[in-house]
Length: 539
Image 1 (cartoon, rainbow, N blue to C red):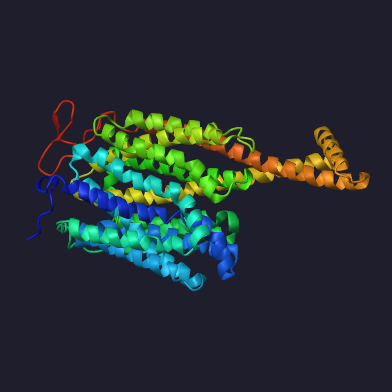
Image 2 (image 1 turned 90 degrees about the horizontal axis):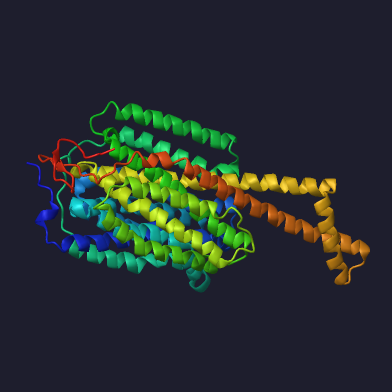
């Protein structure tokens, strides 16, 4: 006989909040570690005496292993239940963090990072599914809003925290700091979480070929995206990644349409509301990771601020988001997602376009204000969409649905970073070439600027011949900096226009809240209580 599943209504009312606290800590740790390492790579590179290409595998290895395990979480939940799964992956992540802190060379660090990611990749979808399962449908928006604090706050403070720890305690501290947090989270989880029962599908066979093809697709796609700028987008290496990813995706689709037990239940995409939620999630991830990637680089590499100051500049938007997410989550339980998503897209577009003239003279306030607008946009695109997605599928499918959403988020983030990075680099090359033409052809503006720089050089005591050389060097540095500034300006404008064309996606979302009926019952809208035989999706 199959064991019964836990129903939220049968548990102590305070239990759901205990679960939320535990999984928030775990999710925060997992996503924090995906960004905290970035600022320490130069230190790790110097410590191990390696090159930039090799040390980047500290990030790439984590990203690939992180994404590869996500499809397994729904199947593992069905086999062993959420408590055992969550505590297991939390333990793996914590042990991986310890091994990272003890690494004696670069290969050992990369292996430790892969182990760490094998736990971290399952924490986010598992914790999200636990929240959606333990909270009743009418409270999921509020719960997912609080859960989203960790998901948003982790990447936001990662560079700041990483820079501080690395500067004061050394780069190993960014990994070892996970140990006390992970141990405490494990103890609380072991004491608080109820040993839930596996689903009735606990004995379904494992879709090995589906998992293999999906992993090939995800890993090769992310590898090609992450290494494109370094290897060259038309290089044999990257083209091979694209070919392998296409083969993996094709094989995955063929397998999933011909097997009964699937690693990814593609039948969920027959639910229009679920599909539209996934599309909007992909767009949100591109904007979130792409924008988060661009701005710190400008603040540090162009404006000259260090990692700590850069993080502090971005901190107000994170705190603002932390205030807004629970509010948006509660509101999403009462109103439909279409108009919040529409407004969120517009706010994200405004954030990008407000940097159309950003330069080295832009004030700190001028940088912070657009990030606050971005915070509002991301909040409106997060809680309502996650709630709608979770409520659009049967209760027993929430684990599968959250796994799909997290895979899409990971892919969307990688694609966003790759696209915006490629645009910035290409525009920098274009503007640098234009500067070279100005110098080569003796452009009038260039000649006037050169004369002004020569006057400055003469005032410093250089003779005429020396002043020409010094003036050309000073002017070249200024023009090169201007070329980089213009490349960032162009990229922000393009990013804003890309987000603009996603506005029609908002109209794929339903006007009113969505509730999928439990087995044996009918769905009802909160406003009318009228029963329907299918998912409520009022377009």
